[in-house]
Amino acid sequence: MLKSMTGFGNATVEAGGLSATAEVKTLNSKFLDIYCRIPRQFSDKEIDLRALLTQQLERGKVELSINLARTSAVRPGITINRPLVMAYVSDLKETANTMLMSIPDGDVFQLALQQPNAYLTESADPTADASEWATILAAVQEAIRRCDAFRKQDGAVLESKFQEYIQLITDRLADVEEQDVKRIPAVRTRMRNSVKELLDSETFDQNRFEQELVYYVEKFDISEEKVRLKNHLSYFLEVLATEEANGKKLNFISQEIGREVNTIGSKANDSTIQRFVVQMKDELEKIKEQTMNVI
Image (cartoon, rainbow, N blue to C red; front, top):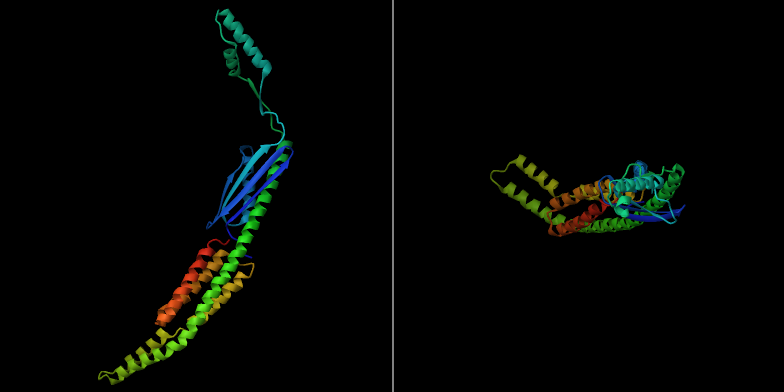
């Protein structure tokens, strides 16, 4: 089954007063390129997230975004050390009175807050962090699952398109084979005239005659190219139907198809076949473009 590199998935999980929303977006890229936007307090988990994304999404430009929201009342992580601040305020007022100075209470309070140890930082709760991380991880895993489902759905559309393009090339190849039968008499006539000119020439050269004959036979015969092109088209569909199907392999087969199409066009020396070749190239370009979006 084909997978597209274009995908999107998001999910929200709520637990323990925390709402975690994860969003995963993937685009075309030759390699796996991961960008994570996660809350700062969980920055140490980025390596784990990258490993998870690498395992599940394989290839493409991947963007992961995580947003957190509290759904219940929480205590601030930093609080004012009230006893110490009150002592600072009292000391500042006494000092001002001693120096016969008048300072507004608001200014005194601001000065007190700027003194050492005026704030208390609560220590992190390992249990709470582990619970929150489990909530975040659940959201990320669900977002990845939905993104992968999106990729499979888009891949099914691409597979149908590939089959359509290959069928169109196959149809044009059938037209080439039909025209090739009509082309042969004209080629035979040209060869006969060339041979006649050589035989009638006073400077007839037997070696040159044989060389010209081989040249014409090799130049205009496209039998081998038609057989190889059929095989490549059939192989493309076979690979497409297997679990081994991937963008790189399909692109390689499309290059082989293009090589045979180009050779047919250059050897046929027939305007009708040239038109069929142009149509085949048009479909082949569509295949190559789409293989760039397959994992």
